[in-house]
Image 1 (tube, helix red, strand yellow):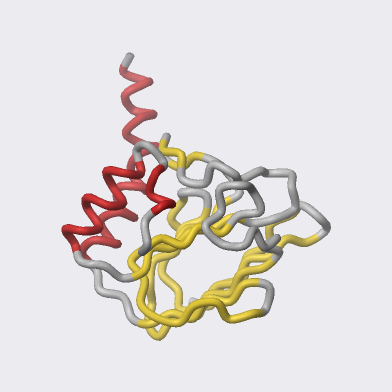
Image 2: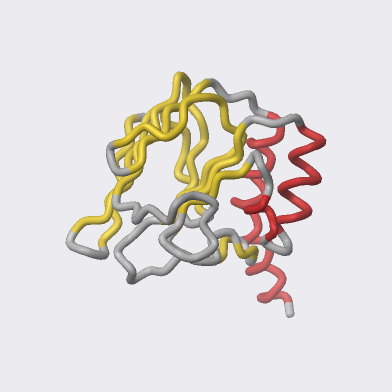
Length: 161
């Protein structure tokens, strides 16, 4: 029982910190490019790149597959604290957050909020250092990061601290 509790606490630490940073830290402008095409320029509250379905026990990318050769990601455009608390945090538990207008969910699967573009690379450039997460794991703060799939299934990440 104690081992199970320690594992739950350990697994929950990074998602809780990510949530905290999204709520209380102010982030500057970012430019997001997918497959070398700029798709968004503005402020975001949260952005998650994923190859796994769950992060911290929460279903964050239901269409993500380790072996399909594509990336899934979702972002929350800048929104106020109370709207974020209700819209994202509460709806995250049922995975209905993807239907919200402030959320853009990019996936090669059927529940994408976009045109189901097959994503092989993502590039994110920020005006200032912001926290980045991959598959629910905190990577640190950087100003520029790129993710791509090479050799069909290997995830390659390059970041500039």
